[in-house]
Image (tube, rainbow, N blue to C red; front, side, top):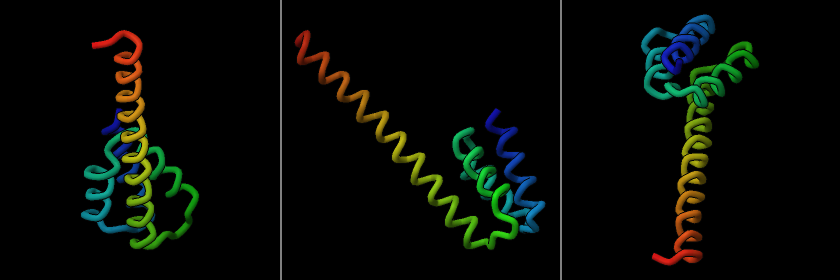
Length: 90
């Protein structure tokens, strides 16, 4: 599924006129999950003529959001484990 979404990002970037190497790097290396691909596709469908800099800036914002979400889930899992230890002991 993620590969399909990455291919969709690749095609959307190509339709915007970006070089193939740039499209492949963004789509397959960085926007390779459903979350990141969906976010980038939403951005690309909203912007009529984004520059390379704008696309890269959006890519970094999406990656940052993803990393924050992952860290939030890790913290929640750790807190859940700590709560179990407090309740039931080691």
